[in-house]
Length: 401
Image 1 (cartoon, one colour):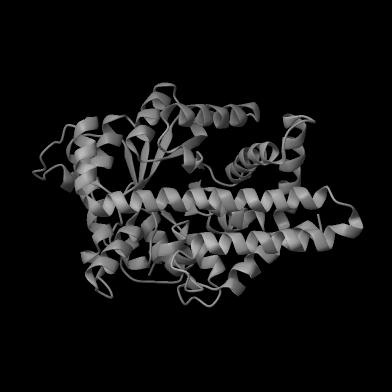
Image 2: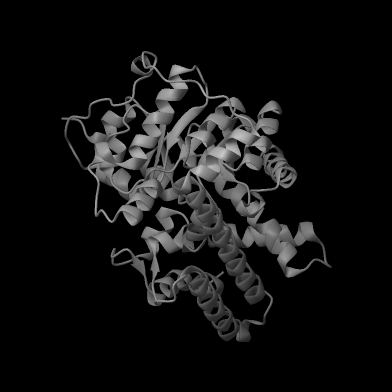
């Protein structure tokens, strides 16, 4: 019998949720998606040390002699995003998603400017904008930016999507693709209901994505639905037939190693027969529905905060590496360790919201793949030692550039 992975690929486009090029090579998805926390994780791997160094050298050259360290780091982050994207595009035949700084999520003009800068760098490197999706949070402001970008033939992936109002607004804006977050919806319901689990077909995240998919197909919207943020393969198999699913490497391995029949659950022909009222969206309706949807409101804010913290952590790591590179060879080791210890303490304090000495998945609020990588014992909590071990990889890079 075929594996779940092979059967899934026959009805759904599988996307790798990873910034690790080696992992992407292993699974051979059509597309790949990245964000600052995935890039932070990948940038700590020794095999990407040269890529990090090259980005910092490029940024220093672009910024000029009088630039501050932060200005250099800001340029280096954009460059790293592009470089990882370019390398991924050498491996996948389709598209890569590259994220706009989440701290711009409520600023339409700034989001537009950053998206155009990213596309300009891709095109300067010889990559067509048709192979890039600009990833933007599904705020009203972000959706308006995406509408303008789509008119410029800059295609967008709207992320941190939890509610039907966000989905309808994206479709009416002509967005290329949306990424509803299955696992985070489940997390919210587990926390607020006191339940320990849901059967896959009752999973609130699965139900939400199914509803969005059926709405789109019933009303002829061309926006693609890409389920994201999965907690288990049951959520994935319940969405077999969805346009796309972006899956972390650990779950891709589980799908590859499991053999059983996989029935199609989502089908545009079935959706076309459903009686689903059509919604008309504008800013007033959007904000009213958003205010009434506690889960969507809380998870959107939490996601923006988590992605913002992820990019701040990446900034700190690059600053530490830049500072280390600017010291003498004799001082590099002690200065680098001191700086990295400060980064570790700062990062842990940012994420440990309740001060109990451990970071839970809810507190992390960043990318699941990075949380899983740091959570070495798989107990759902990142300890100071586990975070330090992750940052230690970055420290080893700074000692051996």
